[in-house]
Length: 426
Image 1 (tube, one colour):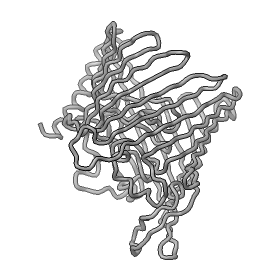
Image 2 (tube, rainbow, N blue to C red):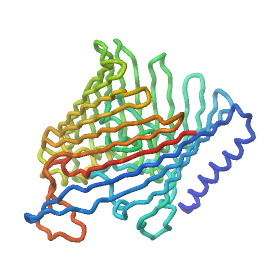
Image 3 (cartoon, one colour):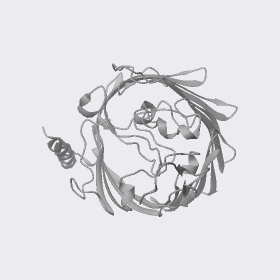
Image 4 (cartoon, one colour):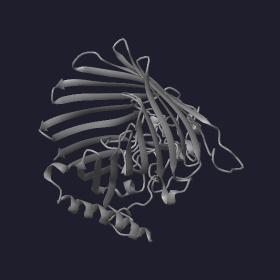
């Protein structure tokens, strides 16, 4: 079947089920959703080249997202969930071809079939200032049996207790600077969750990529137990021909929550190759504490052996497995993150996040506020501000768009972002 026909078949099936749902009793069907608007100003970093300083023009973006959700549950043992996004974007043409931050998590690929994007403009046309995207992000059937829950279809799969960087979460993780973190990107999977006790579980799954090839798919076995007042999770995974073993421990110590999450990855472990990349380790460890009814805080240390020791080598690592397949996006090795939430009023929390790269001494600051205007209506705003040495263009004459080829710090090479968000839930 042609890819376009398969994509049309998916949407047709979703609409057909939505219409069929109208025939169920009212208490078996629920509709919900939300509308979100993100207005963004992006200020690229200054770039030095040949003793001169170049300023790229500021960029703007207005991104909207309408998400419709349908849940059908004809019995306690059977459920169906379908969620569809429609996202019109008005933004600078340069943003259609690049991420706000470099590097970005390489998502996508864990779907058997998918829609063509954008809807507008059509095939072969490059967006100039407007594009319309769509996404069938959930399409999952759940069957609850006595010993297990079986989930088949497009669904969210996420793991890890760390707050900023989750080493074991490689399917569809969030970067710390993602503006919309409410829902994970759906992946196509068959998942079986077997309850072994009140707090113990065995989770097995096959996550499908393009044409269900080993190079694009994943398989995992994850177990979770509660022992000695500690939640212990272990996972073994084959993803895109790579091998991962992960361990996650979380427990309360003296009123504080603590965690340590680690992953060992052997690149290309299931592929014949003349030159095999080095294995790498990622670890996140931290603690959080409620200092009062109004103040919450956490601290987390992150180590990644996949990162470069010196900023001059940051860009040379981007084509390696950790950044292409392993959801690694931080460029260095050692990081400290500090986060806090202060409840200014019951309807107005302030959140602050500081992440420091201990190797090049650069920092990113991320303050934000969120105001509950009325029931189901929210207004928020914030910024991501990188502080550090500026990037450089070496050995090439600057063209119309200056792109650095030498970084002297990680977060000093990030653009500054200021955003406002308006959200309505229904």
